[in-house]
Length: 335
Image (cartoon, rainbow, N blue to C red; front, side, top):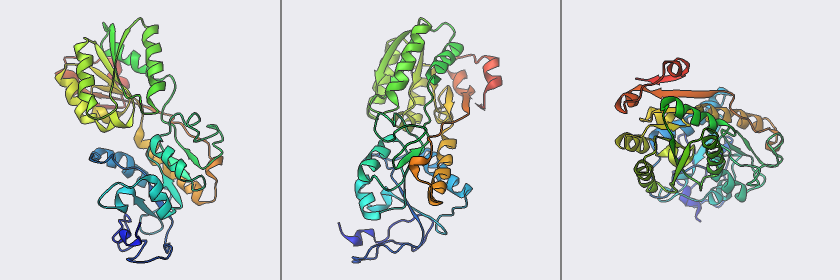
């Protein structure tokens, strides 16, 4: 790969801060610490703007909480900034940039980054199944070069099933929109199944492994006559928030989510972690590492507050009467 491919590299917030000059064979001259942002949409897909703001925007805010200003005392380079004509692999990005810290937006990126390096610190605000995947030794003491936040909380799916019964009291048949190729998927499905069994609810599952699968999966759930559906908390399904909300409304399907972003984009109700906090909190880990802490010594953190959001406009369109007690305890009501 040619060094001149980096001409015009978009170091955010730092005009004229190209790391490699045209034809240069020298190592990059660092004016500031560099964070490599390992996230990028799959080839041929465009990341929704709300996701850019949610994930990257809150990460930048988190850095600013600890005094970091892009272009002044820190730089961030995103994968899509490296080669304008394609999305480079994380392994390529790490080998070429040799950043001070790698920010992996989600688990799959953290896995790829860990394969690329066992020495450069990796911070992930959305870790899942990290011990099983070999990313960390334990949550209390990660032990390697990966640390961050685990937004999945055991037992939360049970609360989502209880919420489904609260908004559709006579429900007997629950649909699950799953995404089992995401590491966050299987643990949720296990909990959701168990919660349904405990409440004597039958379960219908439809899996979506790609964006193209989502409409078919929702249509399948509707055709099976489910009374209410629960959408898993995964990257793919979060990216598809607008489409899922529109299809659920078209199919007259009351739906429960784990992320508020679904409700912002037309979903009925959500109960789960606040991803805005997770990505903003990642700034704490970067600051600790910049001050000399080893990532393996920084315990994995878990969100301490859950967020309940309700979309009354969608409730009216679906003819769902939201209980007054639910609205009273909601953190966010969209009218």
